Amino acid sequence: MDDALGTRIAGEIAARRDDLIRLTQDLIRIPTLNPPGRNYRAICDYLAARLAASGFSVELIRAEGAPGDAPAHPRWNLVARAEGAARGDCVHFNSHHDVVEVGHGWTRDPFGAEIEGDRIYGRGACDMKGGLAASIIAAEAFRAACPGHRGAIEISATADEETGGYGGVAYLAEQGRFSPERVQHVIIPEPLNKDRICLGHRGVWWAEIETKGRIAHGSMPFLGDSAVRHMGAVLAEMEATLFPLLATKRTEMPVVPEGAKQSTLNINSIHGGEKEQEEGYTGLPAPCVPDRCRIVIDRRYLIEEDLAEVKAEVTALLERVKAARPTFQYDIRDLFEVRPTMTERDAPVVRSTAAAIERVLGRQAGYVVSPGTYDQKHIDRIGRLRNCIAYGPGVLDLAHQPDEWVGIGDMTDSAKVMALVLADLLAP
Ligand SMILES: [Zn+2]
Image 1: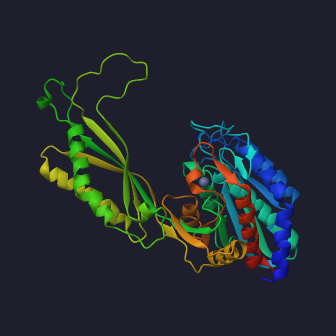
Image 2: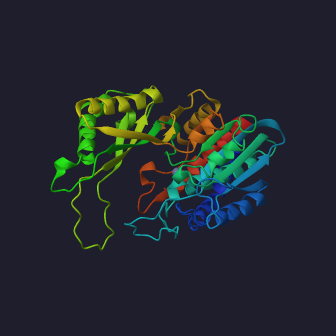
Image 3: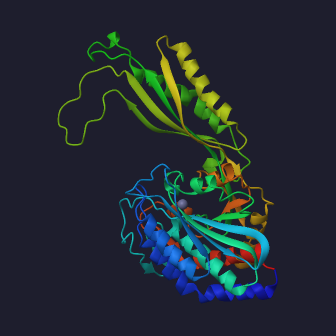
């Protein structure tokens, strides 16, 4: 890329600083809470007006029939596209427009978008309306600096990332909107810090395990068979054999934080015996031997592992317990799975972004892999597009926290990086 274009881009971004702030504030002020999925149409309408005015052709797409889509809370998505002057690649910026619940502990108005110093506060500020705003400013600045560019730029704002992305990126991918013929490079501006490139994420397997027993009077437990005691044996076996085994499995993926560089397992929930009573119930519980006990496990696995083996470890464990307990019976049910994904470091979008980070920030880019999944999973699995990263402003630890904020300086810097990536991939 020639230096004159780089300088023009820096000037165009600097001239849009106030616009970037206003845009971020406007987006935060539309409370797109998910669940249940509020104001999706309003935020898409706002973005459609904005992007149409700057020369994008805009489509609003409802994920009809997707999980969560309902007349009261339709799953609206926006896809905007600006064509260049000649044939070339398409660079796509994908942001989710939904935010998680507010939660407790705020000292600011969560939808006020207050500014203090270099920070804009609000639910979704860093995850990820700041990133969405930065990508829009980057695209507009690049097009102003380089009107004769090749290829195309797409910007999407999609629903439901926080609840799996089925009414958002997964739906668009199923419609072929991330197929390699249509889109060649994808950047997801999630808050991974402005100097880091996120190449992918670990895999996920969720399952429900149920142990079975027989109900009886609690004063004569020997007449029944306690499903909770059976589950206790499962948990003890996990402590004795499974957790130590997982700790030995280390990945070559650059997962952050350090603790997530190994296989992990969380027990999300445990339920056994009588249901918990409504709050306000003042009576006593009934004395019964619990005849069912369930746990939900959340196993995060590494790119070096095979999902069939991951599942086999757990069934082998259950079989060991069964061999030791004559009346032990269990069921195991798959709930959800996502395979690990990691874009190659020499993929074009990675190389361009690394070079742009070095140019803007004067230091080498860091490479990371996310412990949890995000919408890249759908782009990889359904869209079959491997040239995809997450890169955007904001501190990941602030996501979903009270007093979430995004730094104005960080947004400006990452907008510059994104615009330079466009220049590298699309300049004539
Ligand atoms: Zn996010």
